[in-house]
Length: 527
Image (cartoon, rainbow, N blue to C red; front, side):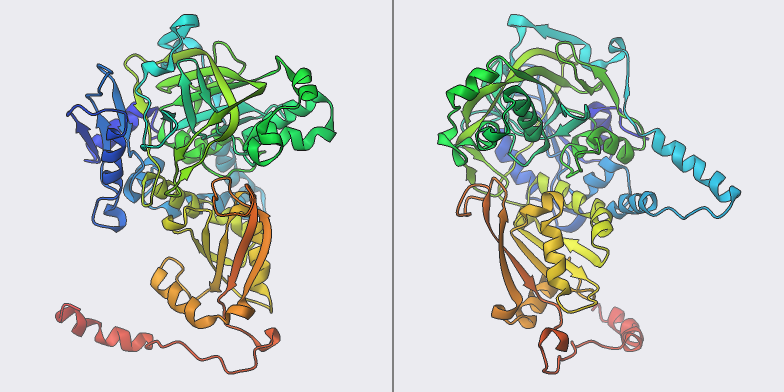
């Protein structure tokens, strides 16, 4: 049964013993983050790692407020959030949709009808505003103040308070489709925040499309890049040329932000979905029930009807402001840069709203478990393009864009290099700094085995390749912002067709029958 909203999810967490209520007075300035960080790094390992979800009930300076943190901070809670016994279960459902058995007769076609009807039921639906819990309180004009909520500062050198778990809705100006993404938002004052739209994100592309339409000059492409994200890297320290600013002055792009949604919707906001697939549909697929949306009050967008808090507003196409620093999931501070500014025109919220937040930093943290869920769920989609892939591992310490470990069914000379290049051409995987490719009999989830194979199987000069391309905006080591080198390591067995003419030794292993024979003896010895 799908969770209707954050409160429904919190009840399930508490019933399962996964939620701890914090009655001690705690400040949203650093203190909550430190407690959540310790919780994220606690536990016994495996499914029990990650510590509990935390509900802060006594917030310094915010009487009656509640803050929820670490809600996704363990493997078990990720499974609970997606309502599965294993993350592989979602992958299997995706594979069934991607590879349905072709009907051979009328009865087979009839058997497919329930599946088609089920999929049709995943599309979001808009409900009457009078039935939407997020409309219980509506604030406009001078009543608008995002600082009435306990927005956190998570690290000492942060540029200020940041909204860290927002579900941000924009609309593609060409297709009209909604996009749901998660982008940090630095709070400048009660009515304005930053909008950290890295240039490769869908929302940044929506903004560029509006800029193109407003300027009607494709020749301004470099300048347009400077206007949307990471401006200092592109042109003139983020300055807007006067001739461009004149054309776009007063032009706006509408934005809506939901804070505190049901877990599947929050998770859907981080998935690397292709632009043509709406994240609200992905959320419906994950929760096996359509997401209920409601029209905003002041912008032409829809938001989750059961959200705790909704911020409505716009960004001015001609406006940038310095954002950052921010303690990021890389374990380092992301430095200041120029980003669009979000102006809040209306706030709607539930009575006594629960403020949902997260902290990112040195892994493992809450986002590590969310990233691992993305890895397992989207493996079938990667296999659509690269069917030779057997498994992948994105270690938390690689912060999901620095290291990908892949096992493949090797079929021809150079196959590992073909897979590397295929991954670098695949959506958000283009940011992967290091790719390691191994044979299918290697368990890529076992980092000890991976280390053994890589260190033994490679001739560094022969088996390591470098290439140039886009890198993540958060990569502070690249030679230029957003552009740098990547490395691929071919740790597969080498073939004569690849110029390797020496004998390749077999790895040590015991026959299965021998292992079976001594199982009982080992059990009696406690081995």
